[in-house]
Length: 533
Ligand code: NAD
Image 1: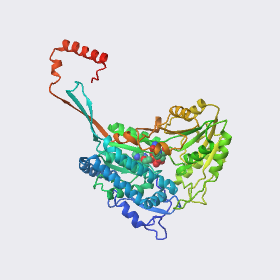
Image 2: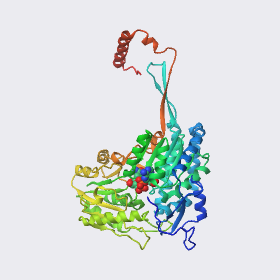
Image 3: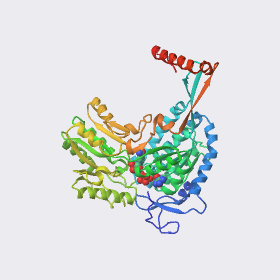
Image 4: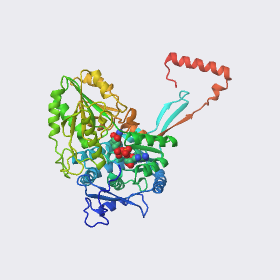
C-alpha cells in the first residue's frame, strides 16, 4: 500500500498531534536497517487521520546489509538444538500475552481495525507459537528409512535450514502475517529478513523487540522498511527462500523474480471466497457466523467471504436474520472493545470499496444493507454492505473487493452452488452450512479451496494450528501452519550409509548376470511382499 501523505510532517509542524508518542516510535524504528540519512515517510492512523509515525526508509543497499548480517548470525542460531530454539518461542508466547495491551493499541492505530480483531492476532500468534514450540522439534528430527539393500543400507533424512528467509507482509493482519511466518522460519534454524508494509511497520518492529526480549540472538532477525518493488524486490533478489503474503498480481511478480533465482517460494495470495447455505442449514447459527466471516477486519481479510450462495428454499429466511444482524453492527474508532466494525486501512481502500459498490449498483445490484462511506465516524469508514442481484458484469462479481461488501446469490441445487462457489481463478477459502455433517464433508471436498469450514466461519480452519492453510489456483503456492508450514523453510538431505558389503557384490557378477539376478530379486519382492526397499 502506498503510504498516504495527508498530513504535514509533524517533525517540522509543531501544530500537528501525533497519535503515538514520537519518542516511542523512534525507539521502535531504531531497530530498522536504514542509513543515518535515510528518507522518512509519515503514516497516519485510519482511526482519525492523525499522523502516526515518521518511518525511516531502507534502500536496496540497506537490504544487502541486512541480509549479510542475517547470514553471519544464522550458523550460530542453526547450531542450537530445535528445543533450544523452541524455548525462545515459548518465552515469546508468555511475553506476548503479558504485554498484549501495547500491541493491541499499535495494531489498532496502524490498521484501524477493532480491538477484537486485533486481539485475534494476539490469540492466533499465541496458539501457533505454542504448537510450533511443542511439536516443531519432533517434525524437524532426522528420519531413518530402509535403504536399497535391506539391513545393509540405512538412509537418514536430514532437514537443513534454508539459510536466510525473506518475509514480505501486507497490512491487513500485520502481527499474524509477519510474526506468524517468522516463527516457523526461525524454529527451523533460519535467519529472517522481514519487510512489512509501511502502514503497519510499527507492529513488526514491536514483534522484533519482543523476540529479542524472548532471547533471540542479535542479528538473526532483521527488519527493513520501504516500498514494495524497490525494497521488497531487493529482498527477493538476495534471500534463500521468499515467503510472500499479498495480492495475486504482486505474487505473480515475486514468483517470477524468485523463479529466475531458483529459490523456493511460499505465496499466500488473494481470495474470492464463497459460502453455501444449504436448504437444511441451521439459519440462526449460519447468520451469526457469516456476519463474522464476511465483515471481520472490516472485510479486509483474505479468507473472508465475499460470495454468499443461498439455497432458494431458505434464502429469504436466512436473509431476514443475516441483514438484521448486519444493520445492527456498530462502527467504532475506539481503542477499546466497544465496536464491531473498524475503519478501512487507507484512502485507497475506501476509494476501491466505494467504486465496487457504485459499479455493482450501476449494473443492477440492489443494496440490502449499508452501501455508504461514514466520514462521521472517521475518514475511511464504510458501512458493512450486503448486495443482492449482482450481475457478472459488475467488478465485484469475480474480482476481490477486500472490504466490507458481500454479494448474495440464490441457487436451486448443490451442484449449482458448487459451480458458483468454484467460479473464477481463486481458491483460498470456503464454507458450507448444513445440518447433515456427511453432506457437509462431501460438499466441502468439492470446493476448490485450500481450507473449507463446515458449520463455522474461518476460525475453525485458520485456528487449527496443526492443519495446513493456503491457496489453490491463483490464491497461492505452498502452505503455512502445521508440518508443511515448518518444512517449507528447510531443505531435505538424504544421507545413505552402506554397512559390511558394498553394491560391488551385485555388480561384480558382470552386467548380464547382474540384470538377471536383480530381476529375480524384484519379482521375489513383489511376490512375497518383502518390504524392500
Ligand atoms: P500487495 O501485494 O500490494 O503488498 C503486499 C506486500 O508486498 C507489501 O509489503 C508490499 O510493500 C510488498 N510488495 C509490493 N510490490 C512488491 C514487489 N514488486 N516485490 C516485492 N514486494 C512487493 O498486497 P496488499 O494490498 O498489501 O494486501 C492485500 C492482499 O493480500 C489481498 O489480495 C489479500 O487477499 C492478500 N492476502 C492474502 C493472505 C493469504 O494468507 N493468502 C493474507 C492476507 C492478505
